[in-house]
Image (cartoon, rainbow, N blue to C red; front, side, top):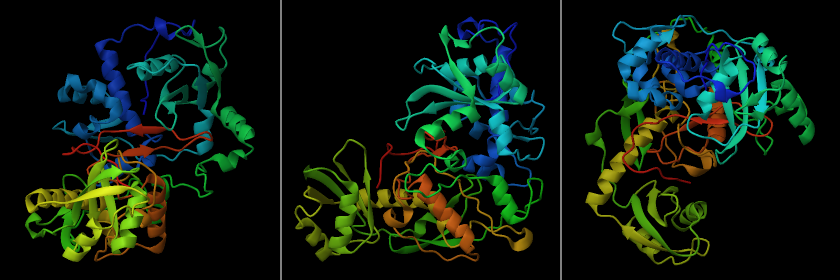
Length: 486
């Protein structure tokens, strides 16, 4: 995501980004500050489920600066160090940094802006060059010459390649009008004339091309006709009967049970990470043959077909851990296989849609650490899927989720109810039917929960009529390379 940037220039005449001067140290600090301001702004924070989960975890809404420094648009400032960033943030009139320089928060409560006002302040521009390392910053500075900007979003294809077009949201309507109505000729970026229009006009144009109504295009992106879930903190707070400035009460340490690999494990809130952790790792039991190694020998590697075939053969739910591009991986089962079941698997032949596989039983030394890692990451990522809506809050007896929010590097295909191992749990609180339906809808859109728990995660913002725009951040450290699981 782009940050609000206000870099003064003598004139906007020429509109050629190539003429912009090299940033001074103070301008670089200002840009870092504006980036954090944007992350916590009315335009971004209430629609970013991951960040909202961190922000809304405590009454004071403190967010760790070191965590925000890992976000994608902040990585270019890593070389300057923590103290440099703290100094930059202390300049802001919109942010407050604590005395130790460890956390940052907004100075004012959130304000909900009507959607129409955002579109009125937004413009579309096309014909930018192919992406290079500092293109985002160059585009931000280009747009900031016409007014203060709230966000610049580089639009991307499904394969994440740059569409060579952007949406820019200005802080006020006047900035957008100055950009759209130049008195000194066409808008150019590095000598190339841009195709420009208001965001509203762009949406109308795309809707006409696709034969859909503009109102129906908002958030309707799914081809199956189902409206995808888009996180909105304002709607969440409205449902809970509170505002951003209301006190929340502290988290209780209410444990709950997480069932996985045929065993019930006690999990508790993770005070540091905001998710869930095992109460006692020593209670995890080794389950023989709950993970089976495999290697494809003939045919195509069709992971979904493999799961279907395993269910039909053994009547046990499973999912697959497989590194993209490789023909080997692990089959993860809801429980351990018996001797007869493993023998049946070995003798099954080409039962997976014509594919022939070699199955490998892991030794206890191989399987035990993999199981523990798998369980810990499953608890961390899926703890809030258990019977309650997360750790309960003391205020008003209301259950409140404290999960990590949207996943940060997984894919979107598949459905949780079809793909993942079924986890059952017991909790002191339960979700309302509406809350459960909303969470299921979210998971259906954002992706299968049986993605490898060691993966990072991504989030999506609202999509325009011709496709969504995605952004990513750094996820938690992983101990194995990123894999796909279907």
